[in-house]
Image (cartoon, rainbow, N blue to C red; front, side, top):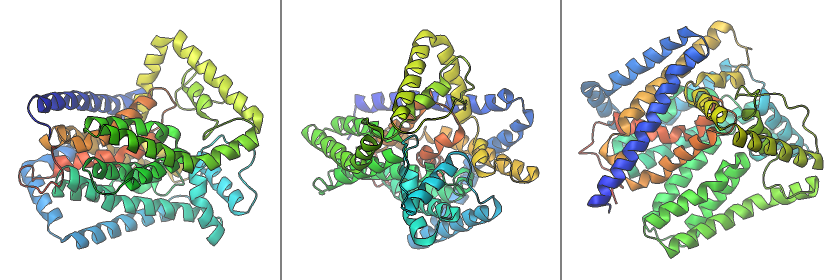
Length: 467
């Protein structure tokens, strides 16, 4: 249990961090339309704020929570997943089928792997999404619809997972609200119609958070929970290398939980399992590229795209990417340029970092560049963008209220999820920015929104509150 002075210290630290986070998010939402010189962008912001405040009104919250809690658990989960599936299938039917940008690379890489041609003489993109697509392409043929159905599957699997996390960390009602939001939240619904890795990565991060609760609680699982977490983070690293450092967050949490030697043992098991999952790809890279490339060769290039005197913090042309061993040297050269520039221009880096936060957190509508890429009728695409930003702003309002709830402020079971949010925001200060980069942590934000909507702060059945 967290008791006495530790309660005040913990609550004070999380309150300060949460306040700063929400201020950053709110400032980004307010700055984005002005930064883009599109004042009509404030209309969905105002609508989203109004919806968030209406949902927080005590009478509305109480009535809606009674409705959410009325079905039995099975009926609620099944009904919510059906609603989420129907919405996602509708979006898939409406938007263009062919993927664009990075997603097109994932598609063609999976086509090549499924056809037995291999991955090519490159490791520029992490292979995770292509590896997920490959067995489906091999079994059923190389159609992008399979990748979209796969993302729908990950989105639907998130619903019972976030329900369980909400019940264990906050309350039953908060869990149900988070699950309902996971089914209906516009960003998750629309982005399921893509071949992006972000929804799958979000599911893996939530699964790691759920398993971590069981380790801290002392579940009798021997080494298996740590090994499973490591396997998930290993594959997550193949989706996006940001997962490589998450074991440090877990070790920090385990050590503070008093596990001590057990914390070190579990951390070693996590790293071993990650290595087992990642090693085949690393060995393949060494064979193809002649260098020990752990996952990918794009980190230095992407870092440079956001850290030079001519960057717009989104994307810039760095010339053709070479294949083979030259790709490693190419990436390392751009990494050195970026780091040298950051050291020589700290003030400009800080201004760029603020711009990156605006791009990442000021909107959710830029994901339409991967969904439509100007291939939809302008009116329909604008309607999509407006609904995305209404939902995004309403989520901001709910999270701002949610982080103030006592069960959030002093609940150590939420430390790892919240630290993951902070970690992702920190990474966004350095690399190129677009709103799809916040998708992997939306599930965590939905937990906080669920806390804001639940009308059972005192009477809810929390499975794991303050330890």
